[in-house]
Image (cartoon, rainbow, N blue to C red):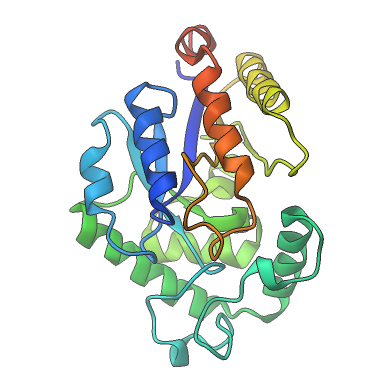
Amino acid sequence: MKHLSLIADDIGASDGIDESVVHLASLGIVDAAAAFTTYGSITGFALSLPKKTRLGLHLNVSSGEPLTAASRIPTLVDKDGRFHAPMHYPGTTPQQKVKRYTSSLRQSAHADEIELEFRAQFLQFVHYVGHDPEFICVHHDLDTVEKIDHSATSATGLPGRQRRLRTGTLARYEYALHPTSASLKEIEGYFQEQFLLARSTVGLTEVITHPAANTAGLESFSLYGVQRTLEFEALLNLDRNTKIASTNAV
């Protein structure tokens, strides 16, 4: 029985992210990847992944530009037709900015507009890859918002993490953005702790990772930059093959 899955987020946002995930997947360190369809084609990335690596859709209403015309989703976009993004909200850390953005989203975003955009992203995924995503998740962990979670499932026919938690097909998941002060050793310790927690948890644990081989091109996408390169290094440094074998033992 499998107890732990390491999922890499944000595929398509930068070459450095994509390169790191292909490398980690080739080593068996991550076993799933969640890809945007709002940052261009992911066909090449999908072809580069080992066949055993699950490829999911990273639904997005909080970064970059939508696939839907801005006039059809006015509560989701700014005056320039781009998604309202956490990096433009008050706060000194990414976590604070995401928290304030999420609070605003709960109040102002219309569920029918979210579902419309999510449906466009789902269809674009099928166009790029040739089949449905194997799972879905939402950028910035926004499926913790009920109308986001509902819209994601309505648009794709697939359950998000919150729905899977409620039905018991997912025991727990861990989504963390490490502070800029975090050291490589601390991030390695975080992943080691997650392996141990998964071993003591009945059912499947998913740990969400945000690796990147470099920070080139990330400035306009995310405030979470250098920490991505540390996550990448930490995952490479861990003897994951031994740990995951014991973690996923029956």
